[in-house]
Amino acid sequence: MGLNNLIKNICNKLGSAPKATYSMVAIATANGIFRPTFTMMKKGESPESKKYAALREGITEVIAVPSYIICGEIGSKLGAKIAGKAKEIELQKLAQKGEHFAADTMQEMIDVAKKRGSSGLNLICICAAAGLIIPALCSACVTPIMNKIRPQQNDNKTLDIKENTVKPPAMLMQAKPIERPAFKSVSYSGMKVGGV
Image (cartoon, rainbow, N blue to C red):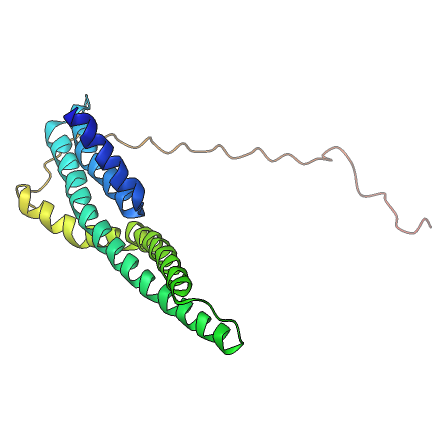
């Protein structure tokens, strides 16, 4: 019964306040576990390249999880604030026009607007994190981390490649065409121009 209650409580908690943050953190966590695992299980790759790729994937997901959480929370709080303020202004304009609501109704409308604004801007910030922030952080962080982790390669090594050189083919000389006059047997002495 303990496991059943635990699953039930988790589902109730996640279902009562669904956020895009939860799903993206779950996806990033799963990617952080399974992608490096499957990369290491590939056959036909060298062990060094598999380790490098798996470590790079793991570091990327380690950067992604806190980025999703931070961006999602900023979006939720900012969205609730913006939407709540906008609803208050809208209700004030309606009051000036002569439409009045009870205080509890107005508060309920403001709370609904805050909830919608919170979830909407949460999703937008999560998308911005996935498309802009996380790639920028990975570009800035992953390469320096990988350079510190993997052994430095000596760049001063020269390539010592000895190949059998192939001689280019000799130039073929094209034979000169034979010149033959077209009308060799024709005599031009008796021709007249103009017919007279």
